[in-house]
Image (cartoon, rainbow, N blue to C red; front, side, top):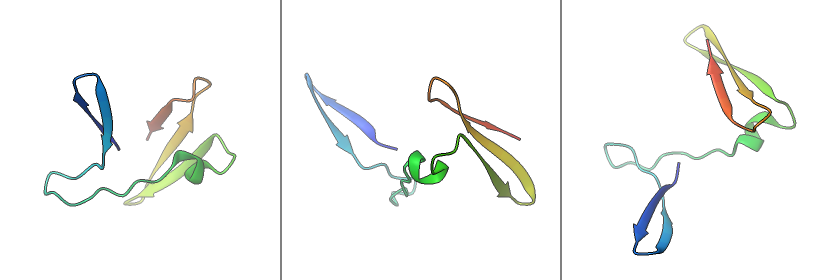
Length: 62
């Protein structure tokens, strides 16, 4: 995710980094959903659902 850095009234985007300083991979939500409103993620054998709400917010549920 982008971190917004403020310098007075000027704002610029800074690439996000993990706590160890390595860059974080960014994936656009439109690339994940591909014209759908819901997808499933298998994480260690447990299925999670990622949904787009009517207000275009993300909800992750187990």
